[in-house]
Image (tube, rainbow, N blue to C red; front, top):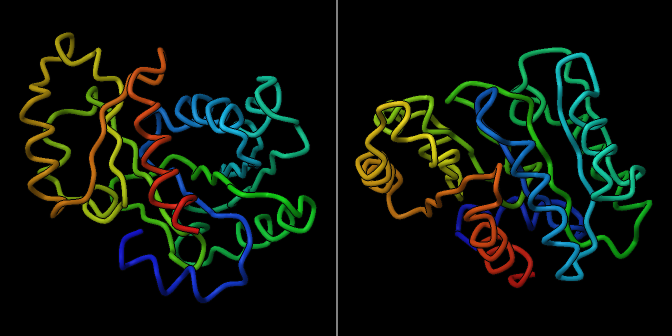
Length: 215
């Protein structure tokens, strides 16, 4: 686990590891979540999910209907404001939801917290999560890393999704990846096509190694 995570992990009571998934609208956060759930369950990891949305529980309902996880293990947070407020400035609602899951499932090992869709400045409070992913997609343009948004710069893991679309949207994927590595100062970057599940195993391994095994 990276050094930046230590203060938050020591500050709150020991419970399930909390991993945030953030990124712009349409980048593939929920698709990634739906790929992660069965992989962690197959590994024997006891998991639960929190989704964030402005004034609905639509993402939570989608995950509940998916059949991938028991519906009662999926909680919805309605932020009622800019999505990053509830994961950064005042994560009280998400903290309460995570604590509720810890109480309900004493053996819980991992809580995946999906943010509402937001811009490149979105980031997670380390009072809320132990580790966080930021998802971007190639259809947003290969200049995203050069824009140096907080999510790109500070996330523990950057996920570049929808890599299969690169030739169709005139994106130089090699340059996008190279520039992501350059601005992230050594932090990990992985490539996925969440619609097919390509590259998701590597995301699972990264979370397992840097979060679950470390605990």
